[in-house]
Length: 110
Image: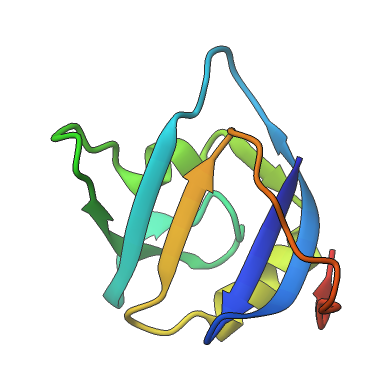
């Protein structure tokens, strides 16, 4: 299992990810909004949680922090990713198999 980070369609990061809990994560798409919440980020401890908008075609959305709370990634990598995210960033979360190109190397490693 892995987390991939892309900027403008180009891969800039890759890290191992562990999924806590039982059951499938499903498929989720989120878009980063401006600002933060008053809660701590579950992915980047010590930082405020970001504000996310769920984008769904299935009519059933799950809050981003509920999904993020099940993910475990390298804390240093999480801090780097946190700093690179800008409003409008799209995040796709799925536990389904994906195909990735081996042609481009990631800049951030976790």
